[in-house]
Length: 222
Ligand SMILES: Nc1ncnc2c1ncn2[C@@H]1O[C@H](COP(=O)(O)OP(=O)(O)OP(=O)(O)O)[C@@H](O)[C@H]1O
Ligand SMILES: [Mg+2]
Image (cartoon, rainbow, N blue to C red; front, side):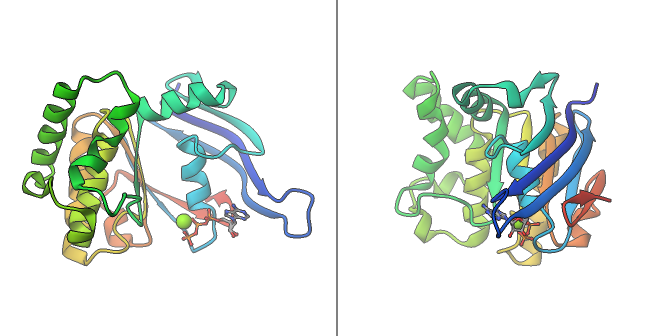
């Protein structure tokens, strides 16, 4: 059994209405633990929809999905939220940070939903920030950071609960090439620690650094 298994996953937005869109049309997908996978496809082909479903942020219209043998679609919303917080780290295109708060506050945010003690939280934030080269930036507000620094903060936040699965949706599209390459280097470094890394990108050169590329076209994996 593969770490990630999707079978017949379909997502239809506005089903039965005049503005119905079939964003995913029967996706079968198998990803092994510790693999790095790039997802490519033209705008509107269903990449974000796929990632959101993988990350349990969205539910499909049909199909099955297991992670580590666990049936994700069978979970209650509370179970899903717990699963997401513990197992999955998200890195998004627009970073999804609270701009008026500090880097430290943002990175630490997911820990407020867990049992971690304040002392532990401070130490964990510091460790992750050092690893990502942003330790000196912790007290700065997000508005005072560059794009590359913001993405590092976002990745630090994604890693704070030590997730097994990293889902990144165009995390480098707002960054210059050098910074984009550094961010991909960071993500692939996580793979070396045994994490499974899945990243959506429009950049073939970045995709080439992953173990393999999934091409998606009009809601179907090619
Ligand atoms: N919430 C929604 N309601 C209705 N339609 C949606 C919704 N989200 C996405 N879609 C549609 O589903 C299709 C797939 O969208 P998706 O965001 O997955 O594309 P994408 O491959 O990530 O594109 P991009 O490269 O532009 O980010 C598109 O036709 C989009 O308009
Ligand atoms: Mg998208």
